[in-house]
Image (tube, rainbow, N blue to C red):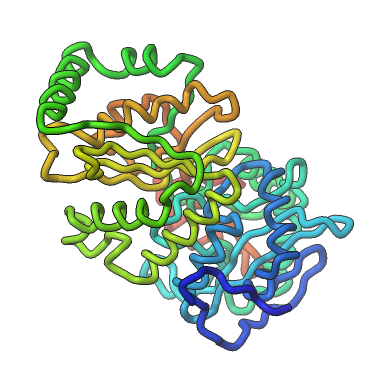
Length: 390
């Protein structure tokens, strides 16, 4: 099947040889370019709408432009599970020769630095079937790899629990090797009540003062967009604003690399066309001083990216914008929101009170000898710092 163009700016994946991996019972692996036609994307989008755990970073509109721009060696493939012809599971996989600096070959889910969830897209009720099929493939086709390593997996979600069950049933070594706790938003309270419960009276008074002082500098306005209105110029403003701050100086801003800038633009267009996008901005005399992108993946959402003008830092424009973002609590279709922020984030942790565990899990594969060797390495790695699941 021929691949469709991924954007309107001529951004295409470089033609490379396919990374051949054999087919396993219940699971197929395909070059992602061969799963980017209109028919495949329709299947993919249908799976995303029925996913046991929402993950915008593995939806077609997000993953395809990421792969096209960032999988320059063409190593990633899509693992697909079909049940009675229906697509019921999808995850991008890649074989890597190193494990955080150590020469340990492993199979891992493909992610990039601006993707904050690695949960496979799995149809409701198919978690055990998906892990069984994926692990069977890894067992029968290890290809020199020692284990399966899964990153950015939500802890205690239905997929995490299903993986634990499948591993325990097969006496397969499986462990959490890293955990981080990040802020999330989940409450039955409305925006005002939640804000009052999170932020002290003194801090709320200070924020009102900052809002007043900022308003004295010009016309201060808040904007919320749920459609594609002026999305191209909005993307331009966001990329420029982020690059003007410390991320630009550190070289980590999206606009510092044409590939990540392109991925950002295409992803927002794709999210918007599917009703998955919400854009917020705070402007002063028409110029944005704080901006935020939400990916809406009911019943959850992800605060994908946020930025603010550091020249106005003393007025806390980012916090003022987050105050408006609490309107998510009024949405009936959204039950929770993941901050996508690092652990102990100095700003969002002061507003969003709930927490979400994000873990890395390593799982033994292959025959008895391979699993035994992995279990020895696993115990050395954990050394009392991780959690052996089975």
